[in-house]
Length: 273
Image (cartoon, rainbow, N blue to C red; front, side, top):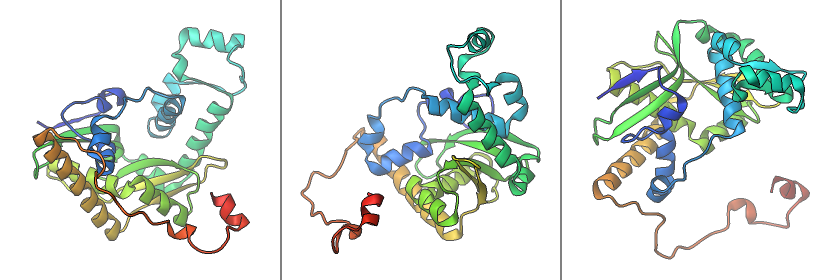
């Protein structure tokens, strides 16, 4: 059964049974036990702010009606704040630096012509897709930040440094290449249609919230597909056997990382550590 919908909350999406997402595949890649016994995460303030940023950028009309920004209020004990939360969801009343942060992110992204070219097209925000992997038959799911009706996916990524070398490290560390390949293939399995290459909007968290749109090359996609397929096959095997092993039990040799081998540590190395 395939489902494609925008009528699903983030909480509902992440609690779906019988299907695995990219974040689940990341845990499987660490070990099946890390996926099977992962603790359920309660929403944090950072997640709340992340949802606000998504709404501000992807659904500005919804943001304008559902969120209240009190940029001049820095103390939630103030009468203005207490009055506001009587009529608004407290999670959607943003004060002081939080309000400035969300507004700054919104302004920076909307000043980027390449990104706005996508956001100004007809499309859907927070689009959930649930279907089956044709190879293993297991359920899979993904959630697009924004998908234009012409088939261009856009994903928002907060980062400390949006310059190419720095963001390339983020792609590797957070497996964004796995996400790009997996999302595009899940869409193909669900619809029979091929999407254009995913765009990543790398948004710096600190002022001036510089934003850069990136596409990944063919090599990154090939590696992303290899990694998600490896994890997806492992997941299917664990489901069939109902066995969820952790790390290898055998003794292993351990080498120091390359950066730790050499001469005495310099001040620069200490700072990096």
